[in-house]
Amino acid sequence: MPNENKLAPDTRALLTTGGGILGTGAFCILLAQTVFGGIGKQGPHTNSGWLSLMVAMGCLPFGTLLLVLGIAKWIGRRNPE
Image 1 (cartoon, helix red, strand yellow):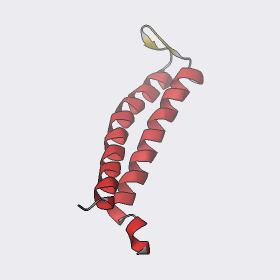
Image 2: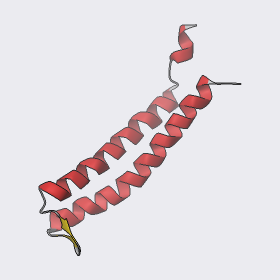
Image 3: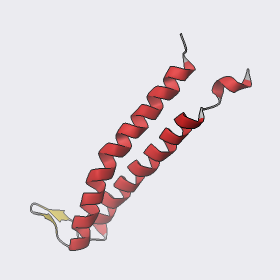
């Protein structure tokens, strides 16, 4: 029964892609806060900060949804009842 703990290829793809996209969004927010001048009341202070914020605003929700879908598939395959 060693195959029970093995991830299906589609589940593994969802988990790795979701984690990568979510990590990219978190990295972009970190860059916008530190390297690209920070974010004030009116938004980021530089053009690079705005670009980083826009990338993060796309990556964070999409990456979260992919990761949640991958986790749900993993739990669903783990408990086939």
